[in-house]
Image (cartoon, rainbow, N blue to C red; front, side, top):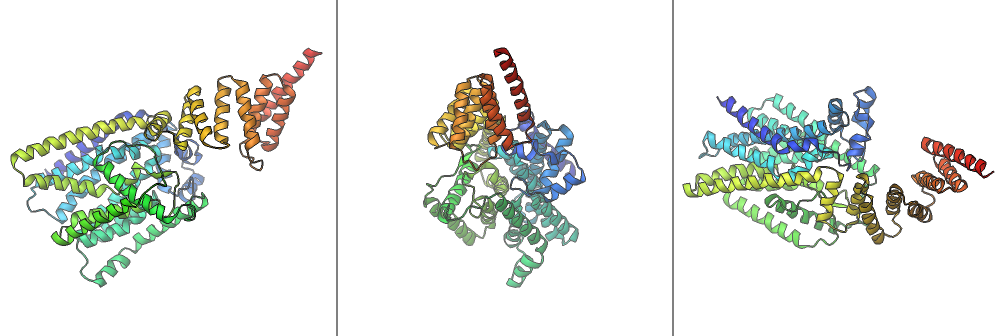
Length: 548
């Protein structure tokens, strides 16, 4: 009977996930990392020995993530480059993560039982925690963004790690211990955020499991028991640092000072908490601002001090340990060590750190209702129902942001208008959808804000070329040649070939051939350029014959 109940609860959680995200199965790629990760990545297209070696060893797009590439390769075998299987995998993983949270909540209540909880109430607490995790709008980004697979997949292995570890501490069975180690190794090979898990396990030892009674015991559990976890944590931390170093993403503190990084980190912690409580105004892009103030640090310090005081005063460790785990697991994404000067944060960054809050909420709601009158229990049920309906509605709206490139950048531009990076991506998205006049509008806006904006000129040239306005396209191509660093050759061949094409269409074949020759000199292996030159020569000879 008990197994039947567990299966029923897990099935309902999985079904709710699939129903809520069903429409997302038919969404397109958004080309934000998905191009380099999947569409232009030939190494995921088969399980050949060369590709398997690449998956294990490659640092690609500043990422070392063998399990991530392996998961994409499985999707490719199912639907090729059609995004259907990739979306389905993300949704199924989100369902499994929610089910993990259900079972973890039950296990925590078994380890630290609440005397007033009946079996039914334990199931309800676990179910509420899992369903809130399923439907919260903050989770739309990691589920719907295929490139965010590393978040949903790494959390699957992290939750498995914690589940096996808790079982190990209760039974002392080495099988559970090594299953926890294996799960953690897989998590570390999926996303480096797993590097914080050994600290999380130690916190569980101290506050939840109360395994540490002396300094000697602390030393043993922290070092000797967890050495395999530290090994994989240090490995993935080293790999991500090396990957960012190779991709030139390690920004010096002389460029972005440490105080600005800390101000930004404190602001984002409060920002994430605010969006967790009231998930309105979510955006796929949160730009970094150098105007962060000192006030978030004060608020954060006061909040941490208050929670610590409550822990000392009332000996209730649940809220305190949940807060500490949140801060520790969020730390790698706070832009303190390695810095992304474009993004202040992202919704996907709290997919792991917020897990404890959902478990706490599920248990807290049921615990609160037990001590309420029937009237207040009724009000609590109605309130919870309305919150869940609201979350589902907001998540459904947020999902449409990830429908395609254009929807994504329109939403970002609506949240942060006149932002250069957003407008550049929006212009490109309009051009991809054939809306060249709209693309021209945003390229021109960016060109006004950026001196010698090469990518703006290139976008304008392409857009005017597609509209058949050859003279305007030629003007911007020639402007690129005037402003670009002459030592930079990459992509310059395409500029010359487009000039050659326009000059040829305008009938100026000598100038067209001259431009084609310059393009071929830069990139002799460009087959389209070679063909263009041959066609221009052919039409040039025809024109000479007609003139003669």
